[in-house]
Length: 326
Image (cartoon, rainbow, N blue to C red; front, top):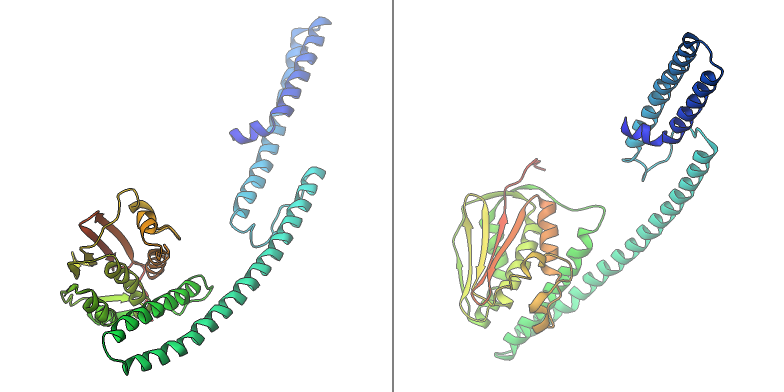
């Protein structure tokens, strides 16, 4: 009730001052002590009764407003009736702000929908010339074919990244949560990067996990592609190892440049590139951000440990809580 007495502090201060004046006047007129005590007792009872009644009303209104904190962004229908003209004016102001917010929400949803539709169409359109270029390159001879194929593969990765970015922020998702063979998901991702390993002469070590994971196959593969893409991109010599660590952690370890200690806490932030971004202008800072977002929505975890000059280990926690198969 500390909040109640603080809100009513002016009322109690004025009431106490009036009571003090009343008692002083009674004393100056030298009325019998019994009369003074009787009048004081009546005033005290009236004040106590008013305090109890007003405190109950205040508590009810405060409790109702506290419940409204969860729904105030959705509706104003359950606002309590204004007790004063000042509260009425505040509620009118709140209603105007709520209407302005709704208008902005509609405008933003419409803008986002238009942007999503445009880029989704763009992604599907650009896949056609990519597929055509792949067919043309199959007829080319080495060594030109190898380099162009690698660049075309990078374009495909960037296109898929755009599509993944749009779908993650969409109000609806196409997740299909089921039990999958983890080795099957990993192998299909590794096959995509096979030419990259050959071109850079990197060693790939994959230890079969014999693990079944409850996830979405397509989106887990998307996250693995972002991790493996970074591993290959920033590893000049040595190789990449994919294995199961502990009971339910899939790790991707490379022998690349590593990540500076001051950059590690921020590598999952959107657009953050750190020291790598200052040396490699192609770095966008989007891959790991999308990877984290994707894995969080799948109910998985991700953590990174790294030593500059020695390599990086990315660990995906595959265990899920509140599992619901589809």
